[in-house]
Image (cartoon, rainbow over all chains, first blue to last red; front, side, top):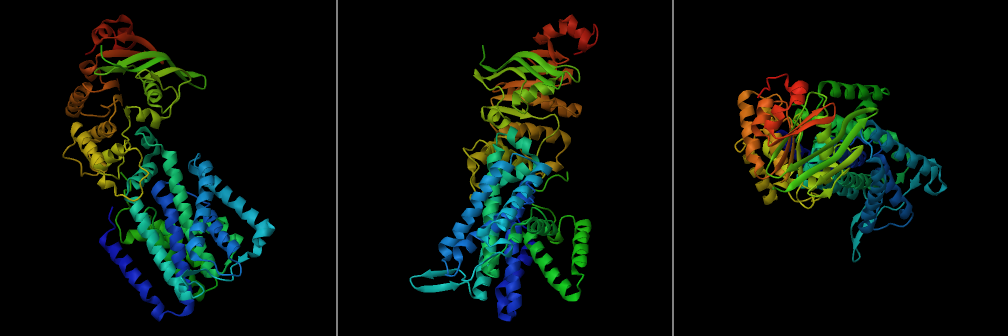
Length: 319
Length: 252
């Protein structure tokens, strides 16, 4: 279960690099790195579903976007407190995941992919076409949340550096949280469900409950990413709930390596850095990016993470 | 007489118009092995699937220790003390042998909805897993990845996982499938050893093994019970000889 030494070393180096980066990085790159870390959180939350539980969701952006809208709706002109707005937004996502999960988890395989997509698209069209959420332009968050304690404000998210370090800390916390969860009795059940759900049931596990709990946890963490996205961008628009967003996260997970947790975070970084580099080179950057994704899937089926790790956690199926 | 563990009455299942199992009535008592034999397609696996809850019966009744469990899903049947092994080895290949058993034993915790405590720290679960491994004869193979075990050992692990759930009734679906003579011998000895503390329902093709361990035999043909009784009675039964065992020379 332990990540191999090479991967742990790489992660350690990346972490040190990220802590020091704002000392040398330009403002644009600091903001871009913040976005990468947000997507890393989003991708890790999806990996819990796809890579560890075998639930391929194509509607994960629903929980990401809904938390973002929750903040944008209460935010408005005056700065809200991080204390309650962050847990509140994650709770909104968790509740949405609870309701949707209770329905979609009755299906499996291709049908599961279809209905998760359908729910996300329903919410996308509802938010886009309703007058209350800013329509297709989106909803602005003019004043960023702050964290105050007795008149002292250690964290003002209007400051890009504060956003950067808060995101870094939360990305790390997400990684540690999911690592811990996956090593628990609960995590073992999830992996068992991924590898052989009928067998888990015949061993006496009510698998539906575990899948639902997993779906809610993944939804809440997607909500964390969505919250940070609004904080970073200052705007939430319906596209953030669309299937394109969900698909992008899925590509990050597959690119980095399903069921490796660190892999999808690496995948998020690789995808977004290459997007940046390729788009500076050429206006046909999407062609290059697509070629890169195809090459990785063909020649590194275990994802980028497999360059450093030999096997995925508890990975079965290869005999 | 020993406790009545499992009882079915008129248990039937049809797929479309085809009756895979029709009107099977049988009993299985603690401390005994009840073997179900019959040619391919006789409905033996369908029967076991109904007993384990993997398949809901179309008609009939299924009781465990006197309580009606007809149509309960497999996880509920399992929680009432039924352990099932599969004809096709059904283990978690990415886990070690011990981890397979630990996962199975974990199912007896009040809940596995514990997100922050490391799985290694449940001492009762570890102990139950180790006991099950030892009972199935894999005591020294715990650290081996399940995928690296021999076929016979994988069959033993299949049983060990079932034992780790502390069942009172065992449903064994062809535990000897694909085994060599020596491995078969070990498995037969294992089933005998398990008999004391379990009610065992055994589906098996290997007649030598069946007659060596069974206390009661039920012969199924085309989904229905042809005969039921003690091994000596079955061996002497003319209908069984003609339909299944092959003429006068009752093999055994």
